[in-house]
Image 1 (cartoon, helix red, strand yellow):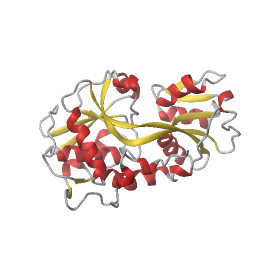
Image 2 (cartoon, one colour):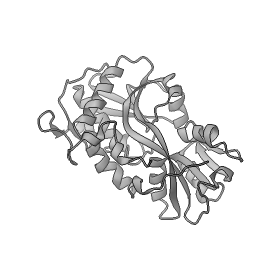
Image 3 (cartoon, one colour):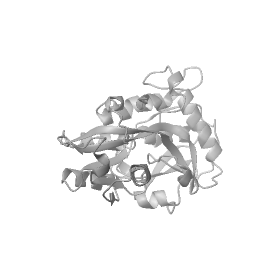
Length: 290
């Protein structure tokens, strides 16, 4: 059955009735703060308690570029985005004064070797294997796998297994291709989203399998040369990453739940994700690969 992608920004999103400014007038406030870029933070300060690397600062591990989620090419240039503003909201609710980003390469971050941060926000899908390395909050965004091809490609659900596929190292798409799809040709593994879509544009591979969000964002930048032709439904989602056994895990999890219930997550998706994707993800057909 077709899953509603953006409508499932968080587990209880169907119960939300608030619109794009975010926040419940009875329980939260909205304001801009210089330490939070262009974000309009919501909620009550000191509603959670965090122990941070630096006084009054929430240090956030990111993997840039990640358009729509953290808008900028380096930590100093990021002032907006779904995940950046979610971090600002968490910091605000913890009574902190600012957010500071710390950029890592994807393979360093996802391996668990990165250090010196309080939380990580890099569109990371929660999996049992990753729970052995990190703590996670509850999901803040439900995710699926998108299949990107050249616009005139003849790759379909029936031919995907026999196609030359590119995947991102450590991505859930790589795991799905290896363990579920089991293609007849070895998948090409790349270190960054930019690399896999460059390979697709150059005709080195027939298709890319990665998060639908990543696929839509990357394809939009090609001006119609590439397309997201299908997606695979998964019962998975992105969570806030914390170092294993962090004493902040429970508080961050509570904050994510509050951001869901007061409408802030829905607002952030409307402000930053829908314009970045260029299309409604629900318009991308779901494929069943036999």
